[in-house]
Image (cartoon, rainbow, N blue to C red; front, side):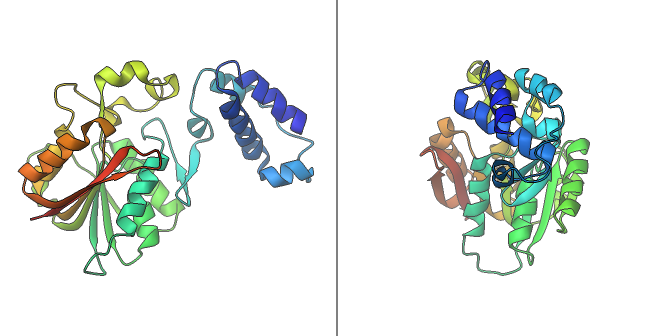
Length: 273
């Protein structure tokens, strides 16, 4: 088994850094056998008849994300379905969930709105941690909403998901909430040159990019709608100062920027004054 994994890693090292290639090779082996790394190393039953993985390797060599190849990912304690209609959840977004979960809210039965829910990862993670909360997720993509609903069922939580466009007339009627959270598109078009092919060629551009001349368009719109008492955003590290100024101009108070595990400004929160 170890020789097979080393063979996969060796092929992947032609396009991936060595450490990442090895991690992907183990991921492939675990997925196709249904065994853990410990079981694979111990030579447990099922390790001798590993299915042919060459098709998977070829797709990886063309930079297709492994999460899309297998159709799911483990994130924040959840098993989530992911498709090219949804972003692959990132560790930074798990930190956003942690920030909200650790916040001391004055009421127990919080009403939460997740804007741009995608796979539903944020909404579902919050509901899983706080079953008493009333959580709603919205997204402009009908396909994303379909995936989010499947993920809620997959993880045994009740979250309301609905298709909605925050720029549409009448969106204000969606209701009022104690918490509004969003990880909206925040990567400027000019940043594409620095991004990897597995993101550029496969993940949904509409969930990633904003115009160079208006990088805060989604945040500003959400702030203007004033749908929630507390705002929590995942942000582009390059615009932390601009985000603070924008929220202050919109009348929000107690604005705080938090760094991610890489030391980059990644989360911002504010309270409706």
